[in-house]
Length: 229
Image (cartoon, rainbow, N blue to C red):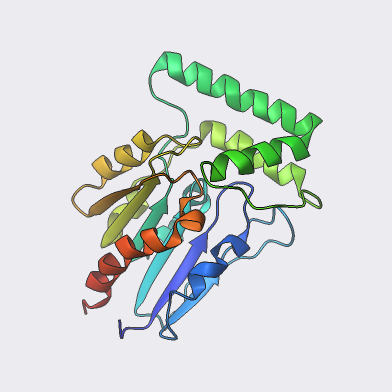
């Protein structure tokens, strides 16, 4: 890959930019890497696209796809979606009601015992892998709650993603947060320009627990786009 490109990464709910640190070593000096941070655990960090980059690659995890500004999505050549979804809740009415009840219960519990909720979420996100040990202090509960409420009603705007040359959709086969059917739904929307890969025995945190398997799938897709003029 001899074309300079910029990589921009968006983490999901209750994560921060450090989750992408291992990914930085996968990109050579011909890439610049910019890691966005919502500010759940510290200071937020904005990222902007570089004018001198020939190509732009977006990495998004979970709700990070919804938090990524449309102006960034529109200018992306490649969009990589890990554990993503167009809408968090199921479409079928009976399953939708249950999903909303669970999320509303989580929101209520977040106000009463946020440390417990965060620990349970991280454990569930990494399952079946072992979750990292995290010190659940100094978090911005207002921002975390705001985004949980947003998750309850957010629907992804498809139009900005249509301008990408390639969309790579990866989902964990054992994702207990966002079912793999959600990843398949996205693939069906972008089928003409998308590729889909399910990582066996991976959960919602698949880009961080199964980085090498994800990279083995993504790298050839990136090469095809980066070699185009």
